[in-house]
Length: 132
Image (cartoon, rainbow, N blue to C red):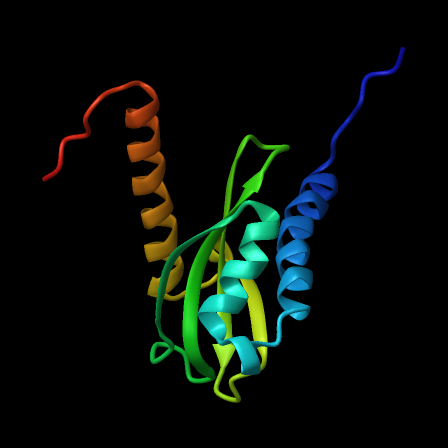
């Protein structure tokens, strides 16, 4: 019996698949007809993902809106935090890993996911989180 060896490249491929799944789910949405929020909701529903927040895209020169989303990563038993950027043309979207961007929205998205995880863990343990 041979032990399964997982290389760094295999992990990178698995992480890229999460992003690709969301990109494909968004491609079948007609954002110019249904709007950005509905396109996101429909794409995330099929992936069991959730919208963390939406905001104007002023922080990026080529963005009309930015959404932070999380999708389950079953292999790592955690969530993958992604940014969906709607371009100024109102139809082009791109998906980025929140950990790979060098602007404040990526940090905010990861922090928001951490807060949600804390609340979820508290609810599962039947505890009440302390709000500051």
